[in-house]
Image (cartoon, rainbow, N blue to C red):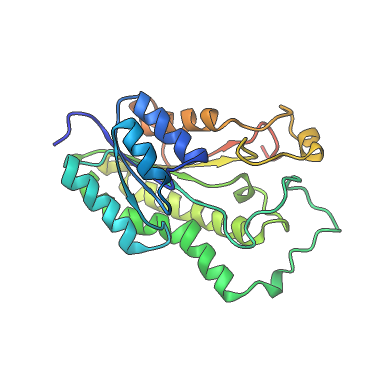
Length: 249
């Protein structure tokens, strides 16, 4: 069994997932990574971790990464469920505000797009929870962070599938965190706004009180905090990281 905490990072090859991986490596975690391409393997080689190739939308691939972590390290202390973009789930970086000119073509979205979004945004978290919860229960501790979106707070016609299903993810997170809090297992969502791995238009920059994108490194530090003992009394929360873009209080 590993003497260091062990973290699984999904969609870990680059962008937000890669930044989370590097931050956790700096904090002393043993890492087990997964990505759909070879980028996670390359990053694992660089950082001394382990990686598998697979899709977060496939239950068998998630099982492979969990089995790999247990075979190599004997424990799982942290999981980062980093969801990708989905069809009809993201639009140009124009902001979440309502505009009468926006048309999501909502009733034209196919069942296939909805089902794909469900696999990418909700069922991936449920499937991972099924796999790691018994492990964390035996350990008496564990923490899971799901990368969601600011659109979970203010659904937008610009990304209807992502908005709707990340609201559903908030319900899953709250139900899970309530159920397993006394087992020492925590789950939280982080809701980033526009991150620096995607361009921000001048129009949306004017809407963001901080006037800039979030850096991937900033987001990764928040994720690492929520996985750490420093946040040991935080569970069942949706933490918005959007520079003030959401107007709700």
